[in-house]
Length: 257
Image (cartoon, rainbow, N blue to C red; front, top):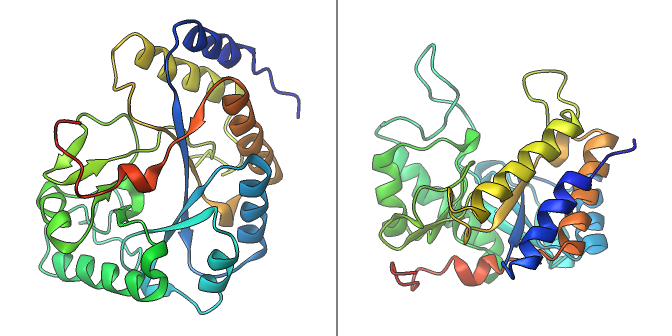
């Protein structure tokens, strides 16, 4: 597939000409076990030299996952819900933690305990709510349960989602979820990424938030794999730098960041 990257490359030249810093990061959701797709993701991490933050579903972890992540230090575990089951009321969008319910807080605690047991110091204590939705009352509880960061989708409205809880979102999703689940139209994807960067450069959104790619290795087509790898290379060659998410996602960060 031939893709015209020139609109994005032109925007990246503007960033370089203005000496602007562009931190980037990569999050991939729904890991529970070692699969051929996860092995391919590990190869992409090595090819691009980009850490990939693997959002792991705690209640479904299988014994094969820990050795793979230990073997590939560029694959970094974060917490992806508890069971990835929707509890949304009828007629509302899917969400595991998007609505107030008695089990919400205890499940967040079990999720952290389970991930800590499996991954220990390798774990970044970031909470990634399934379907990128979480209620405000649960956001306010995350830091008291041991979480230091929250990641959903779209430009963050503030640096801290709650006291001692930094928000680090994703902004680029190449999957056509409402269609055939293949690659979205590359022209539209690149236009959207370029607009996202322009909004940052011109001060409409937070230019300090790492620009995040969101992928789902278990459902990738060949075109999605290729686009994801090429996008990272275009960004890196255009002056972007991998964000140190582990350093950013520390509970000791000042709210004045």
